[in-house]
Length: 310
Image (tube, rainbow, N blue to C red; front, side, top):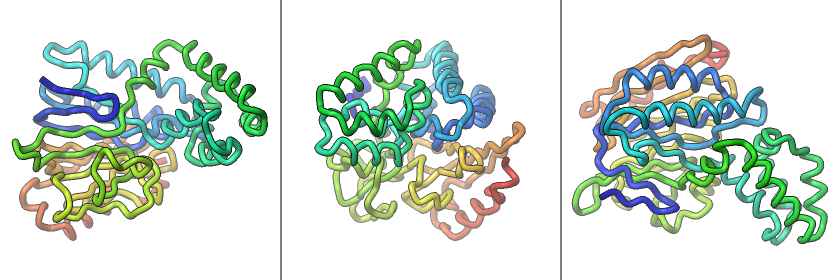
């Protein structure tokens, strides 16, 4: 029996684990990736989206969410699929939006609004037709006015079919079962992880990391920690234990999707560029685990300059 909490999703023991990086509102690349996955995804696979679904500069964020919901329905229609085989995490943008919906509880509403906007909440304001200037103005009002305004935001979200259930289904992280002693698990997070803390103690580190993203082999039980967004925008990294899949989608770069086996070995890296271009690069799960330099060079070969992907 797989147990799933309101915070974390139990992925059990997948045959393959597909992890999608931050999308940032790029509908074309998301749809292209879905076409590719539709031919590859099979029973006992798991699919995890790491968040940052819509973007501030995107033209049709509503269509992005519709694409996510439609593809989820299509996969779940396959015999043998279970509802928790497809997981959507809450990325920094979604976390900022949730905090904006709770603005009345912030110690300083004006400062909270600025932080939420910096983290991408403006994309959700635009999605529902809410002015950024009005949002900044309401932050200077009293708690009663702010509460009335956040209730209006929730009402706008509820009016769009599927949006509120989607937001309520978002989780903080996803974990595979691993070995009976708990070791060998694979952890998927939105944007950060502090190996010195337990998963329950991560707090803001999952979305707004204050430390560099790396995993100390002596301090963690995870065989691999995978994130989909890099706040520093340093590009894809396939370090031995810590994997970053952010190729810059929504900022001119490709949309990345990593395929891992149940032990966390990287089997394949799917790169989706412009004009329907899909590249699939194989990784040797055993040999490459001991050769981080070779693996890093391989990733650089995959990621051409951003202008090529436009």
